[in-house]
Amino acid sequence: MRIIRLNEVINRTGLGKTSLYKFIKAKTFPQPIALGERAVGWVEAEVDQWITARVNERDLSKINTFPE
View 1 (tube, one colour):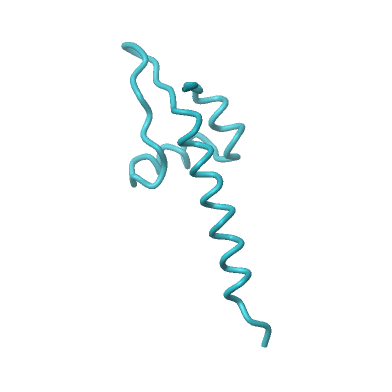
View 2 (cartoon, rainbow, N blue to C red; view 1 turned 120 degrees about the horizontal axis):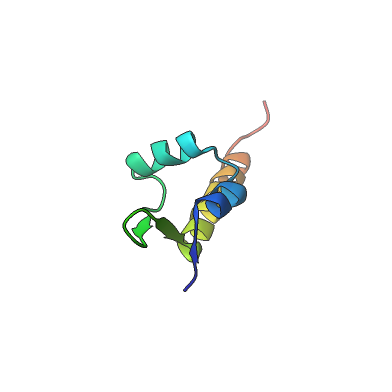
């Protein structure tokens, strides 16, 4: 298991810090884990799963959209 820090999460997702924390608060993004008193990180696999789910949602919406 690999833990990634905020900068890597931002780079992987393309989200800004404010948007990222908005998703975390809404519980629609993997929750960070405490690494110390003032440090947090995310489980890499959970972030990757979140990204994959966004791609799958996009792909499903293309399949379910019929040309007029």
